[in-house]
Length: 287
Image 1 (cartoon, rainbow, N blue to C red):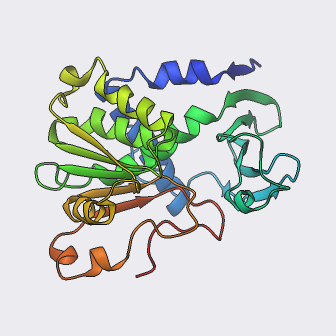
Image 2: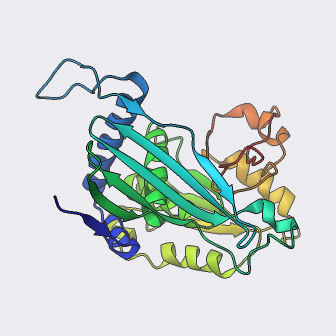
């Protein structure tokens, strides 16, 4: 049996050149997989109009370890069903190490790792680099919700907290699928660092802007260093139709009163928060 090995560059090359139609097919596959996982039934198809029992699926809770040597957290995420078994292992800088001199890493460790796939009998089938694949998969799942909104009136402004791969793919897939309806993309970052410049440049110089229909979409970057950060943050949140949080923050990213005030309740918003992966992390205000 063939063992497939894909590097991050190979995976990035595949998903970076998707057409809108190919993206929609990916969404359909993921939608079906989530349906099977949550209901234990298969999605009806042209070949089989009736829903049937899905293969038994097991997904134990993830396990994590922290390294004093590197200051990094490694996550172990297994899953299995009658069609095979998978194990995803990802290592990234632990935010808890920021105040611990002994655990603080010499450099920031971006999320990196791999997914190993096995047949039901344990034969290795694939070894896939997980960096781009993880960000793409997460953004694809978020897109299932984003695409449910009325694009003509509830997708004009998207606000994104974060500047990493997750932020990039959430913006990129939203533009690919619904770019003609998106007028403004707000990016919020802790500082105007090289990753921010790189993220912004990737969209401003994208050769597919006109082809995909978002050549008139405007982009902005806001950091706490701005003299009027609090005022502008409030304005951007109130104007937003979709708010996407892609940070490992341990504190809420905004004052909860902004969106629960009378002014904030004048319209509904979709909030997608995917950055937290440990119990002490929090992106959304409790109230």
